[in-house]
Length: 87
Image 1 (cartoon, rainbow, N blue to C red):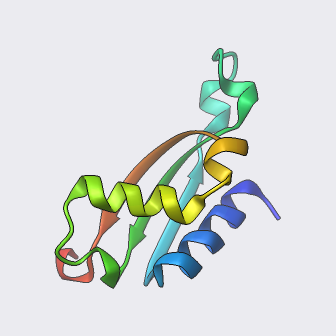
Image 2 (image 1 turned 90 degrees about the vertical axis):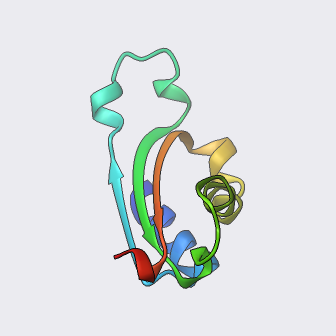
């Protein structure tokens, strides 16, 4: 299982996400000082759980959903988090 696949599965399960897209951007950061410490990813998540929540709270929910992965295999994470009503 790739890092992107594992991230997508964690987000789907923890946030009951309607849609999850994970893009591994690690190759774009080759040579970056922290690149060896984990991957660089961009995620787009759509979940009913984001309804009524602001951007900071949504990001915290994504970080919590990823748990230990944020400390182990993810070095950088770009997050786009939407409720269904925003699509």
